[in-house]
Length: 260
Ligand SMILES: [Zn+2]
Image 1 (cartoon, protein in one colour):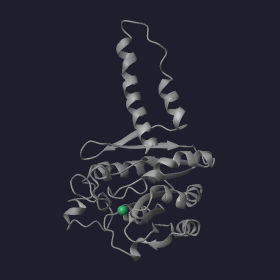
Image 2: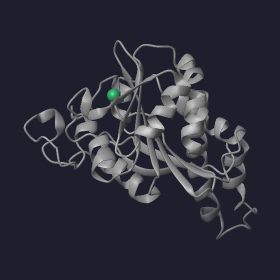
Image 3: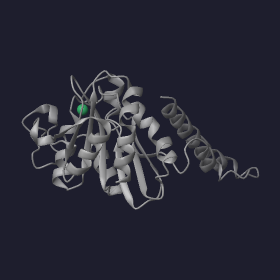
Image 4: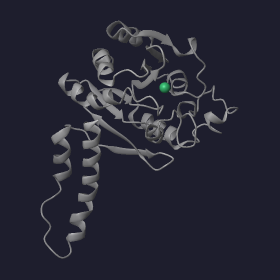
């Protein structure tokens, strides 16, 4: 949690700093400030900086940042169902683990912190409109018959932001953090069975293919995995489990999956 708070604080501080020198310039010599933004950021997480990729229904920022510069692009989404916060600690720990495992030359990792910040704030599965963001993607199986899915694909700004993140990062692998009541497993969509099986062998989470256990119309897996052919792993940890234990359990498998 500290990491996110510090990151947010730095983001606010940077935004404030950015305008101050410009205001002061006409009347007094400005101090040499341009490196400040980079310097402040690199003190906490090297080569990382938050970018806004969209805003939620209630105006909360949807942020992402990238680490490393390798040819393999991995997009990690820290959450999309607001009442599944078990993966938040993992999201916070990823940058340090990425650095400690020297992945930067092989991998470019983009972390989308939270695709549903309104739901996270309210503790609800859906967003502030009561829509399940993970049913609002333009997949061929989108179901307009249920209001929870949204009236049309991409009617919700959170889903738009996720698609923008995919388009911008062109990932070779997408990993999404979820939680499931009563069991934990690694779920996959698209050409990801092999990487899911390796994730399973390392983490102990059983493999489940999406279309084998539950209908998921308009889901991110349906859209990006099965529709666009991007390997997609959905990590379903046990709902209510200790976030630090979740991290300890899945960390080695995550590192392997990122490395490819
Ligand atoms: Zn979920």
